[in-house]
Amino acid sequence: MLSFGLVCQLTLFLMSCNLEINTTDPQASSNIAESKTSGFFIAQYHPSPIPDNIFVVEQAWIETVWFNKIVSGKVVKAKSNQIQFNLKLTNFSSRDFANDKYILNWEMKDHEGHGVGTGNGVYILELKGQSIPDSIQLSIYKIGKDDAPSKVNSFELTRQE
Image 1 (tube, rainbow, N blue to C red):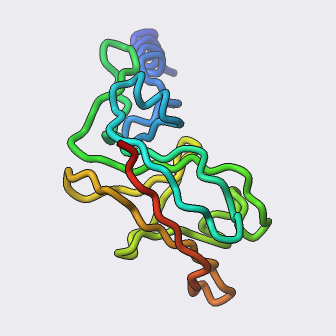
Image 2: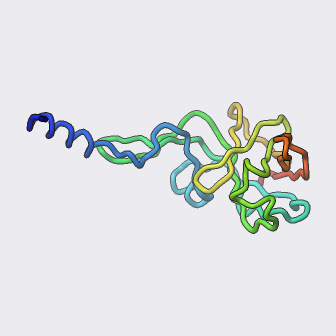
Image 3: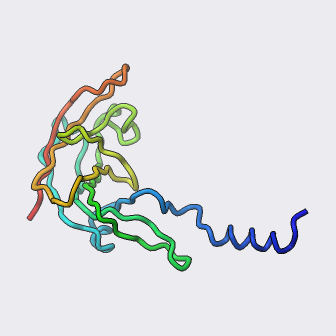
């Protein structure tokens, strides 16, 4: 049987842990307004037309990568020294290229072949270094039955001044 002291320690430990807060993985703001409010926003981008209207780029921006941290029992956002490119996509016009089919049926890559990930409702491309590009070229790939991606379209996003 557990002692009273051990039960108290275990209870205190469990109460002090917030198991719902991800403090390990890098985070992304869900939109430009949130990024600006949090002080992570760096630059905004405007897309060229998306061929075949596969989806609409509602917002595109670069921000500082950030992490959740627990400080004195409160969740705080901590900046890192890395940057990332974020895309908020809407109006998916095809079931093959639907939001919930990303990675299963389709994917995006930059011109160097780096894959675009997802998190917090946005698509995220980790950028190497600290330079802010004037434009970013992304390609859309359909994933075939043999898991081999085939390029469908490309589009460019240009930095707004």
